[in-house]
Amino acid sequence: MNNKKVGIVGVGNVGATLAFNLASKNLCGEIVLKDLRENIVEAMALDISQSANAANSKTKVSFAHNAEDFANCDVIVITAGIPRKPGMSRDDLLLTNAKIMTSVINDINELNPNAIYIIVSNPLDAMVYTALKASKLDKNKVLGMAGILDSARMSHFIFEKLGYGEGEIDASVMGGHGDDMVPLANYSTVEGKPLDKILSEDEIEEIINKTRHGGAQIVKLLETGSAYYAPAYSTSLMVEAILSDNKKVYPCAVMLEGEYGYENIVAGVPVRLGKNGVEEVIELKLDEKQTAEFSKSIDSVKELVDTLNSKFFI
Image (cartoon, rainbow, N blue to C red; front, side, top):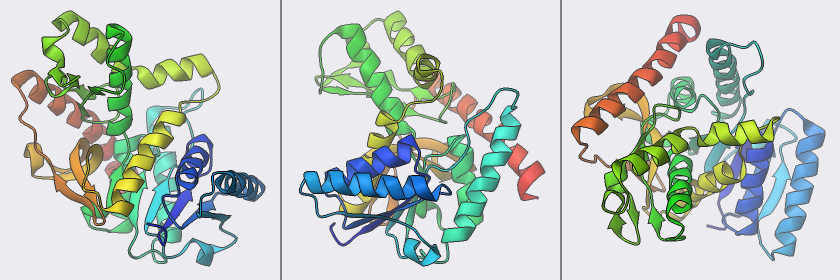
């Protein structure tokens, strides 16, 4: 992996923490940071590079002085975008971040013909859709980070409820990254035992509700920001899977083309990751309730995509 190059666009809390994780773990040969705030990104590159040296990592960390510095990346992570501000509608946020995403893709796409793109910007599923349309890349080369994060949050709330099982909780979440995500209790286990054999239906429903609002809980507590440690680490797992070609299965936001019965829409589903990006979409058997919940989640993403198509792409 040490000859591989990772580019990160947007060096806020998530982007910087991701770079720190990748550099500390010596997962690639080079990390290049790109951000509009040149003094900030230069400082981040210095700080993270020094931390990598403390960890005896061989990863080189730099920042992009110009377009050519951000060329020939193997994986590109995009976290660029603005948070929702007071008085801003959901459509305002959607359209503003779609413009930013399109601008970023247009800026870097030609210089990175072989890159796999991981999108972290929100609203996540709609930004993956935007990146696909702007880049005109095959669907396996553009995917979004959300399902790993949502599954990790569910695992935390399961542990919080049980008080045991740390390190041996495997939670599973599907659907769009939002209030309509679909936590899958029957595909979630604690020490190898199905969750629905350990907790009651009401207890599971409580965990599911907490999972759906896990991000909002952190935003409320922080007051001036949002989560970044868990999102950054979740993204690092995807980067590692692609660079190492380890074929691990993770829930990721991808374009569906017939899977689960849907076409031309992005949603979080289990996928196998490798050097080609998304190498397989795993189709789980959903029960009637889960099928209905997944359909509702798809509808929420479709609303955003319809807005993009009516106000932005056309």
